[in-house]
Length: 431
Ligand SMILES: Cc1cc2nc3c(=O)[nH]c(=O)nc-3n(C[C@H](O)[C@H](O)[C@H](O)COP(=O)(O)OP(=O)(O)OC[C@H]3O[C@@H](n4cnc5c(N)ncnc54)[C@H](O)[C@@H]3O)c2cc1C
Image 1 (tube, rainbow, N blue to C red):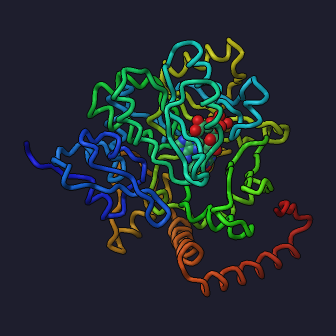
Image 2 (cartoon, helix red, strand yellow; image 1 turned 90 degrees about the vertical axis):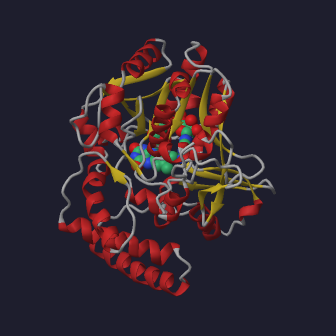
Image 3 (tube, rainbow, N blue to C red; image 1 turned 90 degrees about the horizontal axis):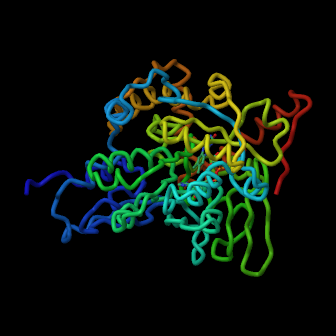
């Protein structure tokens, strides 16, 4: 057999997304995912590897041919730069009030999975819950009951190696719905191109919208700021409890803290994963359908229980949505694409800022992923914001106590001045 590329160079060039596809497709189980510096990194056991090249071919880290994949999968190259291919755009929520209240936004993802399971459209769904024995670490698994799907509801703002479960899917003949971030779905689609059996088994690919994800160190620092030792945590939920929800932390001594979601998200900010800052795909353009937070102004005004937006891209997804709505599993109404885009500014910004980021990376001699896809020309502000982003990441998320203190000092002063100038100010509840 001809020796081919492995995942090694992708990791070395810091292009790995940590999605777990390489570990999931390796027929020799030569790859495992280990946590290093707060993120998942593949570990290759060279003694088991025969350099078949599958891990590299299926890896979305070094690049994605969006145009080629769109053409092969959907029969065309999408015209809309921000959204990609779409058939419908909706806003809605689960009809079950408990599901809606305990999910990330509107509970659409969990409701669709439960509906598909009950209707016999799938045998299981690849979802992610937090581990019982290590509540700050996620556990992707195949849910086969309503209860299991609900145990995984809510967003996890930490690395998740979802696609490690591919091997378990291949070991069965089950029909599966996969839920993941855009990088997971890119990995799934690339893996399907390499392994036809996988393509036959995966019935729905549901992407969550994602502008960024965060390292485990972010969650650890968040707990540290609350004065909570990570090893005293028994239950950790990033989201749930209505809109936009809250973080729930239960300790082994029975005490619990609830912190507004927005405060947690603000604190996680500097811990964004480096590879996420080089991603072009906020809306999971290779999915069958994408769900995200409905930040649409007309909706959030009256939205205490939560709503999600949905973009459907395939006929199968459209049918699933139609059937779930007519069976009263979900409520959906049409959402104009321009209203969605106005509420999800990052989708277009990503396409524009990315070129600026890539140019700066190349100038610094760093590797960047190769995307075959239309990107927009950056403006000067994109270069400035890029430099600010990396400076903040370096100062706040690195091990530079002095720099961090200085940053907070300057920011506290800036915030104080802004408060005096802006009247009235809406302050966020502090934990
Ligand atoms: C890291 C991250 C960033 C996000 N960024 C945005 C954004 O910028 N804009 C936006 O509109 N929406 C964003 N979302 C999506 C949003 O938070 C909700 O997940 C989405 O609206 C679906 O809500 P729901 O109530 O329908 O899903 P639920 O019914 O709560 O179901 C969520 C499903 O997603 C799975 N899941 C959760 N987290 C992960 C993860 N990290 N990796 C793989 N699977 C996971 C769960 O297992 C569950 O099956 C983000 C989500 C995550 C995890």
